[in-house]
Image (cartoon, rainbow, N blue to C red; front, side, top):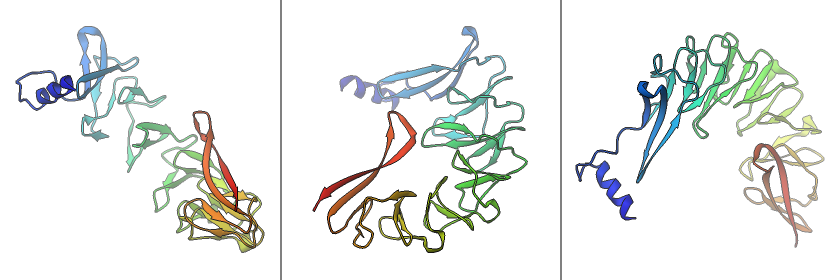
Length: 258
């Protein structure tokens, strides 16, 4: 606690000490490397940029945060913080719009939540476009929900719905990038209760696009979030994933006898 307080006072200049500088890229030509330096209370973290050439490295103004520039490049590479952006071309790397970047051959999505630059597989800047709500995008008949790739049944009539993240075309409904499997299209409806996560058709209920076949259709009542009940059971529904792979998600239902 005492060390943290001294460091804080030093950063504020109250002790006249120097050791709390600006975070960001640091070119160390004498050591033949470039580092990303991050100042925290009581410590300084440093990460070397893999393969960076200190003689040609430069910061860019394409992407910034409170540290200043967080996107840099040398003659061969592009970096976000200290992470190499694979296969990005430094000569043509540029902002396309909003949080979407590109070079002459590829398109990348910047995720501020994950501090990552994600390659949109198969997307090219000459065909890439976004829907009005800035979530779904497309390149020809290949569609993207954030960086998730999918192909709608009917690309020409794909349309995001008012209840995010539902969408539909003339033949199917979608939750994000996942088509709702087995739904009766003519009677399918998105329900406002449960934060818009629930839907139903004439035969079944659905939660976030997954078939919710555990519930009794005729007596099921949605409460809030992922909760509800029928004549026999109380349900709590949530998302889980396998291990550390948050991309491999599935629906998990806890059923308690009433």
